[in-house]
Amino acid sequence: MIKTAISVKNLFVSIGSQSVLENVSLEINDNELVSVLGPNGSGKTTLLRSILGFCRIKSGLINIFGLPVPANRTLIGYVPQYIDRNSDFPLNVREVILYGMYSGCFSRFT
Image (cartoon, rainbow, N blue to C red; front, side, top):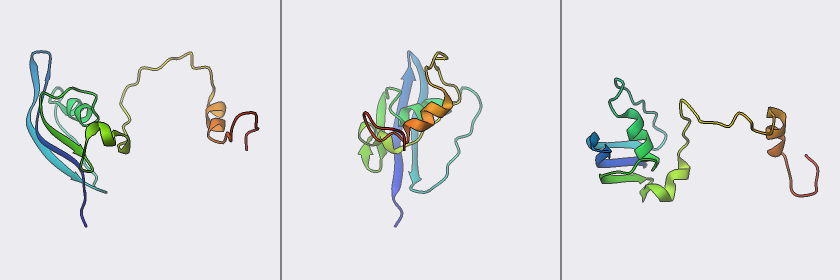
């Protein structure tokens, strides 16, 4: 059975007074690999950010596994090209990995 993972219907997004996406519709099925291609400034990032709920949509509907974006946003993995990060992060790589093995307060790494 084919299940729709992401459904976008008649999406309109504006940033300020600039209309960025107009009447965009698409469906992505579960276990389907999709690439979003286009020239710079064509709205690729705005589309992805809208699907994740990071952009306010003017009108339209976005569903993830049949539910609105805020309810199922955690089911989508997103790795941006650039990240604002704090270079003073107090842990090194080894310590971050060890946190995945931490079993609780006052106990040792397992």
